[in-house]
Length: 328
Image 1: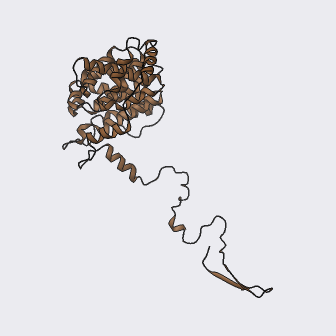
Image 2: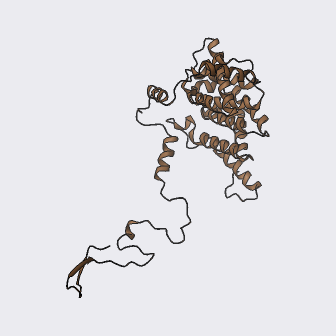
Image 3: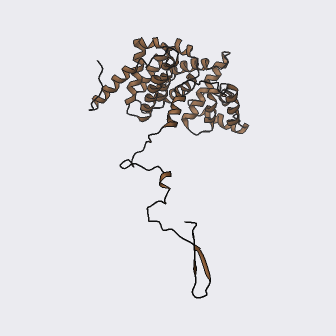
């Protein structure tokens, strides 16, 4: 609408009437001057979904695969305060305590664990790594209940041996538990907890226990490869990727390391989507986020890059495609 005013005289009363002038615009047309302010699709590109500019994506990727250059305000004390504000301690009344104990006694997996022991190992777990697991107690999911049960049992074992509930102690206890549990539900719960704690275990510990840990993971992967459920398998794949990321560059010259990496690669083409996704994310994190890639004398690329490329070419050719690259 324009600001221009049009005045005219009405013949009947002789009065002068003023009203704003209206500018007629054709249907489907924009007003003059507004076209320059809008970004239009180029002809033939109206169906494109991904923008050419990815400034925020690149910034997010650089933060994930790089070390911060300045001192961060995110401290352990700040995280502890945040967790305390977000999640309160678990509380249970006396009546609910009895009901919970009766339910646990009827459950085969919790038949030998009293309600008091269960809650004492879960609600007062001092390691912040498992703080979000405490919220699973309120869930009706059987998988969440199993995770809580395993965490409570492992915590009680560490306390009975005079441990301080560190990440290393939980890692050792969970690895021992992984080798003795038989049910798929318990393996999935142990693997989930391992996936949480291994990200905070000191690198020297993962380097010294690389051989034994890799063997345990490979055994579970071979048993779960054809299983109907995928929970334990995808968490174990994530654990294996974390373990390989922490190793030195010299370890990648060993056949056992490449064998473990090939095992991870093989699951990138698994029939189940969640397993494929976990393996693919693990491979990407190894090739782009291994610790030795961020040192002063870092290599230009990961030692397993060529192996990964050959694997991809082989899978493309087996699927009937044609690879554009070749390696001799």
